[in-house]
Image 1 (tube, rainbow over the protein chains, first blue to last red):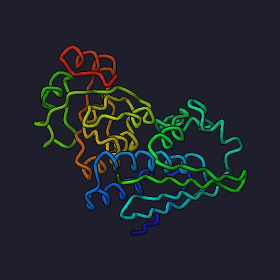
Image 2 (cartoon, rainbow over the protein chains, first blue to last red):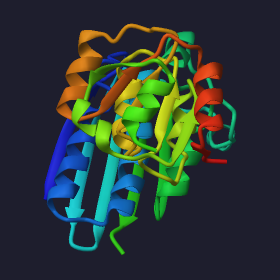
Image 3 (spheres, each protein chain N blue to C red):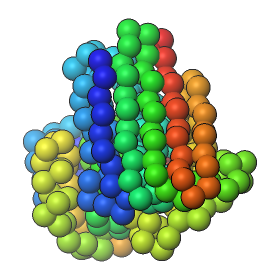
Image 4 (tube, helix red, strand yellow):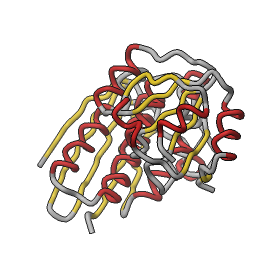
Length: 137
Length: 114
């Protein structure tokens, strides 16, 4: 099964919509609740990252019998120092993002912790692509 | 502890998800930082927060924590209410501070996550 969701930068009202839809789909498919939680927490953090940092992006979700592959492709400023961005507590988030309960430098480490495989491709002034894979067993 | 008892302890008003009042919760976590909430491995805990926006409801949904306790009489916006109803999330509004809500519930036997 393949799903695509457009995400607009700065639109916090809709942040989490894609994650919510994927959660409902995985529930309908009867996936293990513990795995569903790992998927939606990783996806929600990544979705919020697009809203918080990028201009726009697309989420591609591929649900296969053995697991889910999520690709989040954004157009945005990119990440100048990935190692720094992966450090717990480091954040470049705006005050507006912090007011929404995010931007404490926990997102990328949390995605990594919930994923079986996680990679970041980024180019400054162009954008970032996250690939998150989570196995169902 | 029953959610209805929790509601009574914090002098709360039910805003949505009233059908969940007869469910039980063992744990609570108090935070305005949603990223921190998303690191928790437990579920069905009470999320005590002063963050009154759509993301606190979304975080409750993603965390499988369908009980949101909103402190200091913060107002629930239309967007929050719509999302809470869609996902059957219980929102209790309390006039007490986050510190007082947490203290009262801890004293009554609700366990901390950490």
